Structures are given as C-alpha cells and as structure tokens.
Length: 108
Image (cartoon, rainbow, N blue to C red; front, side, top):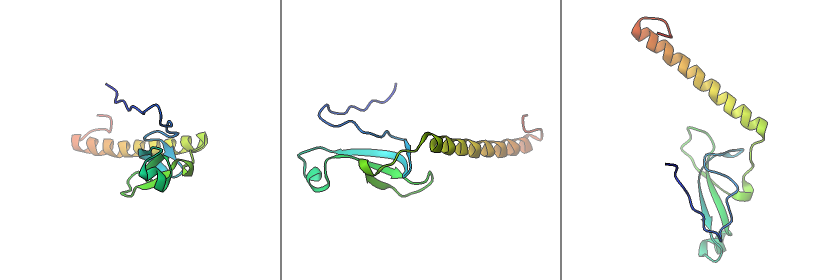
C-alpha cells in the first residue's frame, strides 16, 4: 500500500516533492504555515522545506519555497548517472570480496 498525504483544500499545493533533488540538496521534509497563524504572521505563510545538502550529511537546512532552485534536466541526469556509477563501483568491489570468500570468480 502506498502512503498517502492529504493536503487541505485551502492550502496551496507544494511546488517541490519529498526526495526531490534541487540545487540546494535533497528535500527530506516539508511543512506549511497556514495563513492566519502566528507562525505565518512571523515568517510568512506557505511551504518550508528541509533539505540535506549532501547524501551523507548530518545537517539539515531550511528554505522557503521561493529560495529553492530546481535542477535542470541535464544536471539531474548528471547527478543520477554519477550516483549509479558510484553504486556500480561499490557492487564490483563487493562481488570481488564475495568471490574471494567463495574462492572463485567474481560471478560465482
């Protein structure tokens, strides 16, 4: 079963999605300050996003929706391709280690 998030009809729909890659990092969380609340009066109403700048970072950064810049299709392709290559390299190393344990070829 897919998890579902319901957004009240009187809220604006978020421009960015969870786990979306942006120029600032990967979106890990979002929250909304509805109009008429104390937080919205203090900080402005709308969506706020929590981003992690690097995959293994322990720091979260918070941005307003208008501060986030989406990646271009070529930037997104480049990032994903680099990550796939990294994982393929790690898989090759693990296969070599497994072959050494089994005493055979990497595809044994």
